[in-house]
Length: 262
Image (cartoon, helix red, strand yellow):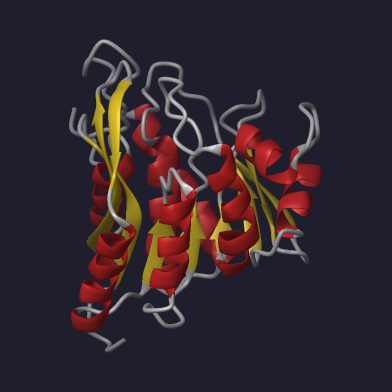
């Protein structure tokens, strides 16, 4: 990457028509972190703050074509992977990653929407564990997602979950703490186990917080940060986005706000 070139980061993820999560949240997070955002859309959802009404998967051929187009012309300095949905999409993304060279990959294992809609079927989850996790530079599950990936029962510690997920093949894991009382993210790369403290923002809004966190992490990797430092900075961006969250948008959980629009 030339000294004056702005890093370009690719989101491979689903579209949220309500603008709160998915590629819409990713592009906002990329802009907030000072990188150029690109997208390869995996699915189109009819979605609002109160629920997901419909999901239409994009064809595997089109997913690969989207990645190939931007990789050949613009180049890819980091990749964030979000909603996948089914096995065919997982396989397409595995193929597409062969087109981005050595770009670091951040995998956000999206399984359930904020509204409760299932966004990853069981077969796709198994394919993700077997074929995608070993390609990830950093994987960013929340606690329930880490339990599902590791096949662990409820109640295991974040530390144990991080170790179990790391054993599946990624180079580093961040088990995010939004579903815990302590609100602490745990970074683990097989050497260092580091707690990244945060605080709860009960007056904010959290729809899209996971997308924002993983996208910010990918952006900071593209800017040359280490995985640990990228995780720290991503936590700051995501936490501030929740604190500024737009509770007045929609009838359900409002979207995060990375730009402080209020």
